[in-house]
Image (tube, rainbow, N blue to C red; front, side, top):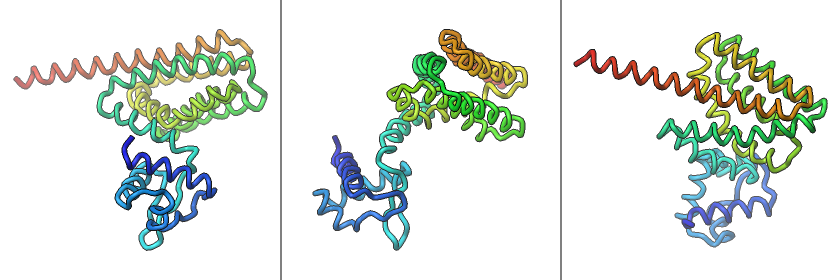
Length: 247
């Protein structure tokens, strides 16, 4: 492990031990170096890393302040590099969708058995938010609502491990949804199909049908994968045709 990564872990423990809250200022640099037993260069590198990830914020003349509790740090450390992979190679989107199918198939299965009336209401609210933001053309909020819909199903599973896994991947899930929406939600007919798929997942959970819920969510994810592949192939064909026309 790099020295700066060790400094990140030590800083995390210090924040937890001293119960520093969001918005509070961290101790001065010199004091932190003494408490953590690290050099100034390592500390500065660690702090800069956490600032770039949104965990800390630096205010000129005031110091460094806690932006996110340490309990959220690991989520961002996982999501950040995976999001970079998606940027670098779009094929990683399909790996994310495969992982989603495995994970969300299980959460939907248990949600259909364990969801409370409050859980079902939360899922329905997310479903209605997707439709609302889609109708007014707010793609960013629609993507958040879409990701929230899937997270609400995970929470309805009442399986703490599955919930933590989904929460840990929430930012990546939202990022993946945004990418998918840019391609798949461009046609009204496709949007209607996706809306119906979301409804079928919700309906199966309300009807307490685990198998139908799992099949519905996995079918939904597979539909998105196939649609994105088709659109990618069509774009590639157009690009090849354009290059041929220029020669």
